[in-house]
Image (cartoon, rainbow, N blue to C red; front, side):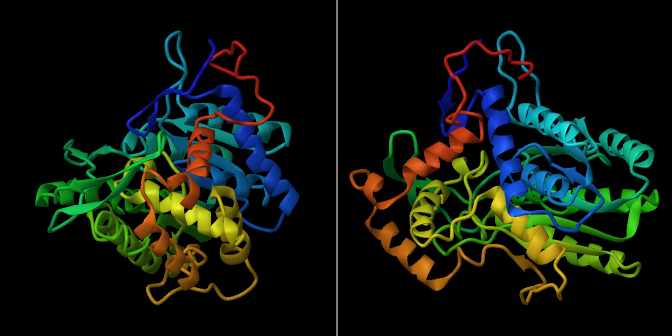
Length: 391
């Protein structure tokens, strides 16, 4: 099959196996060149196939030498479909890990279910004994509550009042105003059930009940705050309420784990191009402007740079862990700098369809979005016929 990107409504429907392998290898090369350090010996990454989850697995393995188990829910290719990017990412990571002499196993299935938790428990027990680090990095549109069987779906909406803001179609650069209506109470509740901390809590308590956590184990989940521009749709919206629940869960889990020397943390990361962020109103345009400013100031980081800094300078640094007033790690420290935000806000006021290519890094947004699906990678022959089930 000759594979080309197919994008509809800011969602890419195809993925290139060789391109995905190339972008995984690029992240591994970054880690190798930047250097190794002492970190976890064993790591379980829940949501390991893309973005921050994949990057944290790469850092744990190739910077720290950790044995890793990755849990994700991806689809292989078929005669008619290319398979998901995450499927090809997992394949490429495991191949690279084995070639480097690193232990790596992957579980494909719905992390919200008890069945997948049991499968992970059995694999940890057989291959690792106990886990030093658990990364929780799930971004899902829906979840079935394992206790009740009820299906909950995520919505990306403001809370309390409608939100009107600029939105960009990143393919053609058209900037329009879009209005999102406020969420209902049931939509808010459902989004928190999917994207909040409930499932993270279940994972950690299940691991504890089965005596599979090392005494000094660390668990960490990822959050985002963002600027005032996106606050109504993000931090003060349904997703933001879910993230606040996640952060409260971290505090509860930290109290639980600290008695034995462990810890639970939240890292507030910077805005990045992901499959999820590409469809949130206002966020793609904000990211394109942010990239323009941060790249000019030479302080831009992608997923792998963020996760490398998280591990080396925070989680496994030989110094007291610096936290904000809410007890969170702040990897968005460069993004929220006043000089950065002042420049982004000024560009936001001025940007439109006519000047977006000049004022923003919309091309960088497009390139990064495509790279997440294996397109636009140097050295890959995109005219070649490829096997969708492998590399």
